[in-house]
Image 1 (cartoon, one colour):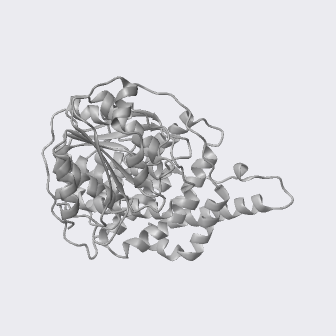
Image 2: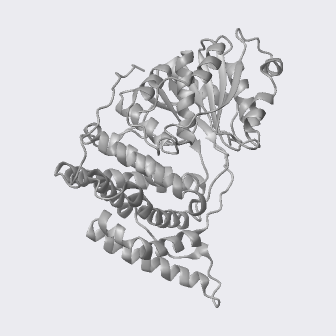
Image 3: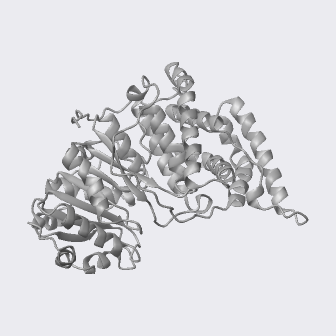
Length: 462
C-alpha cells in the first residue's frame, strides 16, 4: 500500500502554505502549450467565485522537459486576476508547481493525483477541484461548477457532464459509462471524465484504500475514484460544463494502453465489490448541477480502416485468447465479424472501386459487446490467465466495436449520436441479469483469490 503521508521535502513546502479551504489540482506532462490557459482560468475561478475562501493551486508534473511547471508559475500572478475581475478576495491565492514522486516505482496520471490528494489532505481543504492540463474550453465558471455542489450542496464527488464530439470518449461510451450504470445503478455519464470535484472526506477515503495497483497509478485512476466513491457510500452528482475541447485521440492510434489500464481496473473493482452490485436492478439519474449548455465541439477524425485491420489481425494473433475469455456462441459471432471486417477492407482497398471507409458495411451489435464484457469480467474473476494478456487480447475487439459505432454515426449529429450511447447502456442493463446469475452460480471461480477488505465511509446527506 502506498504511503499516505507526503515525502518530507514536499511536506515542508506544503506546510509553508498553511491550511486552505479550496484547492485546484492540475496533473500534467508536456503541456506547456495549454497549461497556461488552464492556470489562468483556474485562478480566475477561485478569485471570482470563492473570494472569502483560502485558495491554493497545485500543479503536479511528471518532470516535463518542455517547461510545463515553469509556465504555471510564470502565468499572470493572482493579483493581476483580481484587477481584471474587480474582486478583492479576503485571502491571497497561493500557487505551487512540483514534480510528483512515483508510486512504488510507477508514474502516471494516478501517481500525480495521489500527490494532489496528499496535499489536499494535509491542507485540510473542504473541496478539491482537479482539471486536465490540455483543456482549451475551460472557463473560470468551471471551478464553481465543480466545487459548488460540494460546498453548497453537501455532495462528495462531482463528475463532469460534457458535450463531446460524437467520436470522442470511446472508452467512456463503450465500457465505463454503460458498465458502471448497469452494475451500480447510477447514470454517471462521464465516470472517467478527467475534470472533477472531491470533498475533503472523500480525499481521506481515497488515501485509506489498500488496493492501489500500477494501473491506478496511470489511467485507471479515474474509474477507481468513481467506483470507490459509489461503493464507499458517498454522495455523487454531475455538473454541466458544456463542450470539452482538449487534445483528442484517435482510438486506433492512441488509446490502446489507456483502454487496457481502465478496463483492467474496472474489472478488478467488479470482483472486489460484487456485494455492492449483485442486487442492483435498473438505473436512475444522479443529481445534476448547472444550466444546460449547447455547443458544437470540434470534429475528430477516426481511421476506420486502421480499426478494422487491427481487428482482423487480432483474430489471427490473439484469437486463441478470445476463445478462453468468451462464451462459445460469442466466439462464433466474433469469427463472423472478422470475416465481415475483412470483406469491408477488401472492398475499400480495391483499386477498381470508389468505395471509401465511410461507406464500409460493418455492424457490431450492442448486445454482443455487452455480453463480451460480462464474459471478460467472469474470466477476470477466476484469475485463469494473466490480466494484462487478457485485456491486450480484448483491444482488437474494442477497435471493432468503435469502428461499428463510427460507421453507424457517420450521418448523425453529435446530439443524435448520443442515442447510440444510451442504446448501448440499455443493452448492458438488459444483459446484467444473466451475468449476475452466472456470477452467483460461481462461474469463473477457479483459483479465485480471497476478497480484500476495504474501508467504508457513511454517506453524507445531500
